[in-house]
Length: 228
Image (cartoon, rainbow, N blue to C red; front, side, top):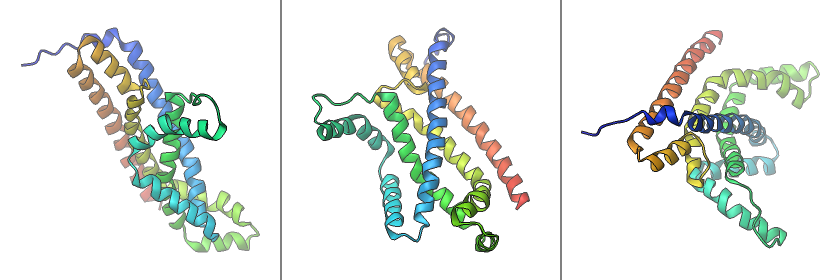
């Protein structure tokens, strides 16, 4: 039997807390940035302009077809080399692990939020668009004031579910040595030879948070269904 010793966790709680805060910060920034650019991509995909529509479709299909960990590696290792080649600098620019992670997750999540928002926009009856035009609103005004607010409300449970998935996916940044929650636990586990204890603790924290948030999303989904 393995003798577990969880006494190490209180001693390193400050370091773990910093890693957890970075995970939450990365999740929030990536979710907001991904939602913003995802909404723009959704509008581009629904546009009658073939250039915009095809560009958005190509971007979404590309991002959804590549493993996230590869995108993280590309942003951290390949992009600095490309910038060096373009600018002619002597050395690759130092983007940094944390900045690379933020840019990567915003770009990656934008593709998924795009499809969610596109479904939300298409769920709104076209009669509301025509009614907006009849009231003298432009396309941009009708989208901003009439369509998008309803689309956000209809898709809110799905958007939150995608954010929960994003919260879990942020653990991949440890591969580029970013000190997120998993990265902090991994460093402590290797230093103190407490692999089982630390990874069990991290799994428990993720389970409690994600299960609680998923339960809240289910209740929210029922309320939205009643409103509909």
